Image (cartoon, rainbow, N blue to C red; front, side, top):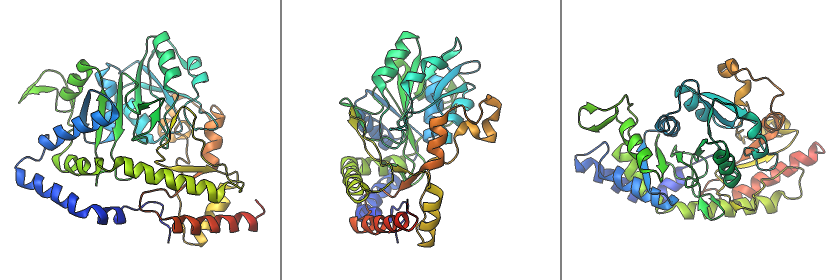
Length: 369
């Protein structure tokens, strides 16, 4: 059986280290914002090549706090994409701002930088590119546009741990960045966790306050804040797993290479790695106009794959009030109708891949696709 995602085998190989980390925390007497959180913040920031990291409770709140730290709220517009997890847009709306969408590139599924300036208005305060599926957006061009129009930039790095753009890691190329350590991520916790990253000391200090009720000292709020703290247990687990992050990425890249060899002669459109960087393959997203037929045939073989994402956010009822319509972002909408994700996680074996590839070949031949 080929699972869309699985952590059990990975856990088995790291079980002793993870349980040891948990025991250290439970025996320490400190469960929230202790030494494990501080150390993980330092180590992950160092890995990403930034000065400061602030551990928070999840990736959505990491984006929310980044927006609030920049002073973005009611009346402000934030440019992003509709082809993303709901969390990206939820955070913008929760901060009081208005998401303004632009279309994506056909090859990479990343924000189309040639369309960004068309969406800038006097209310625009920020560009929020999503480094989707494990690959960075074109940050040089995004930063050029932001500088020209005096805009802030926030990177959404939830899907791009360890991805590289022109020698720089995701999360190091903007005013402030946000990431998630949700269990499925390349660096995943066993529950929700996230982090804000920045090189700006003032923004760092602001986020530190905002994540704990606006406090810089116990029981005294300097400004309205929130409860968005990272706990010691998740920080301890993530510290252990951080030691293996490049190993995880190398395995994912090896699996991606294997998929390419197995499927390059089919009618599937395979992922395109942009020449400016290194793809970390959080997801292996393929595209086919007969996507739904292929998935139905795979279900008959008890293979259930995921779609990231089947509904562009601008078409959702929850965001209808923004005023966008079907047809506004044709590349995004076509992608949503045709993409699906093949399993790609460190414990997936080449045998699993070959079995899945054989089934896909059979389906494509059977239906003359």
